[in-house]
Length: 155
Image (cartoon, rainbow, N blue to C red; front, side, top):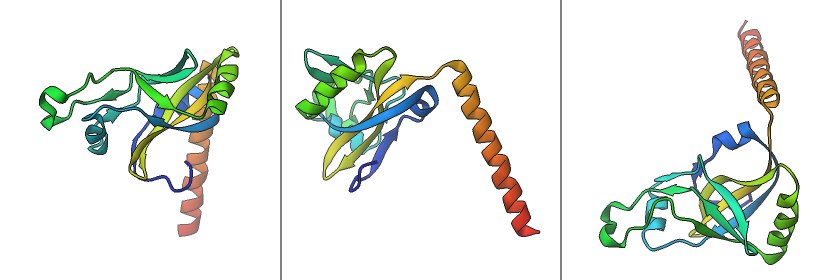
């Protein structure tokens, strides 16, 4: 995460399991009135979210922000498409990268930085089933090593 980043509100843990993350970018989000209040309350889900480039702009789809309880008629659609704010150079680079086969944009974290909601998006390449199995084996082996090391220290 970039230095100086504030409070992490939501993480997409499944992203690292399903994708190889090549690069990350920090982007601002265009929000409506009550959305930031819901985000600050931690009522966000990034699980099925993805970013897409349309007409030279980056949009975040399927990020669920629950309606704010005190929002009454000013509340928003929880699954609406939200625009991401990136520099033109970054967008142009992402356009080139996502045209390559197998690359997509996946949100990794949502956090508050200097009072603004930011999303960390990753340029991701999908993992095959055998890659996922390999990762699980590595994690299990690492856990075993740590467990044996702890037992050794005690004895």
